[in-house]
Image 1 (cartoon, rainbow, N blue to C red):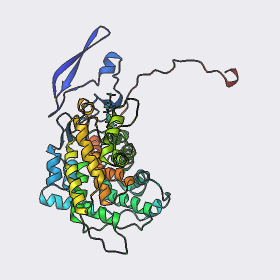
Image 2 (cartoon, protein in one colour):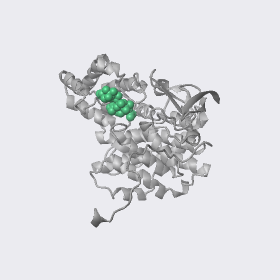
Image 3 (tube, rainbow, N blue to C red):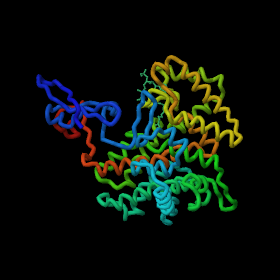
Length: 428
Ligand code: ACO
């Protein structure tokens, strides 16, 4: 795979490093022997120039605004496919045939119920706990409830754990919601689709019949597709790093959920909706644009900017359309949708945002949709985690079977004190 080489001169010596080509995308300099050769490390906080692994799952061209899963563009998948099909594609590498898809759906459906004792486990949480706090705890606890699929050296156990995670995460997410609003848990209904079942478990109550609205079901499915995977982002890298030590997949996905919670990552859609509500009306937009541009003000336009996309996030384009469909269907004329569209328009034409290549990201419109469907803001990141679980699981499986896989162990640029002698407290 080595196509050319790069030369590094350090301490008067020159060293050659192989430069590798992927199937598409930037070349990669293989520096694995750098420390052994030179005694020097590389320094790259935030991994802005570092490839941590080889992967064949997802490709992003941030400059062009391209996102491909196993080669298929995200807009084609969102418009024409289903979340179950995308899950299969991410896990297995190819789109399923009719029978394969039917079998996969049956397998996932058969695992949707959770161990009954989990309901007792939930009751240990405070009622006002953030559903992400519940999610991170309960998913971590799955390793205690499903210990029979935690042997990562067994392909069969890895397969079962993967299916369990994808199948049970909607049930757990819905339970986290039900617990927070004091309503009884709703059991999965295996006659429904993945998205439809999740909607029912979230919004149905025993006292009334619940009919899944096909427009909302379709929007939910699209939102799941748009969040399914995104290459080596912070939470996925967390899952891989946790998994690199041999930790079981339930624990690794819990680590991914913890990382996703932050406002710079999965928490951004909640922060974005709060920001849009704070802006409130179109006439107040200039004030907030000015704040975003002010170096002395920590305020940032939430839902804008991305580490990788320096162009329109292709997921945001689909998301804007879904927002329009859902608002129309729900008969909601939410003024913050107008605020969002106008804010987008102004920012896309403002030199500050243009020069810094700050475009709307996937989170810019998702909060508006989720709010119109009836989810409280605290559930937004939970929904992201639900959808991303399939990506985490696919990436974790890829890592476990990669012969080049090693425990992740970054090095550092040490700037602390050099060696000194201890003095007893009475002499300090
Ligand atoms: N509003 C105003 N200015 C911004 C914004 C923003 N949303 N985002 C970046 N900038 C500015 C920075 O101040 C910086 O300016 P400078 O070069 O003059 O110092 C420049 O653009 C580069 O920003 P960085 O923070 O260095 O870029 P980085 O790649 O580290 O950050 C991030 C990316 C975290 C997403 C950032 O754009 C941000 O905070 N956005 C808002 C939060 C958000 O929407 N997150 C969702 C990400 S998508 C996801 O996780 C699914």
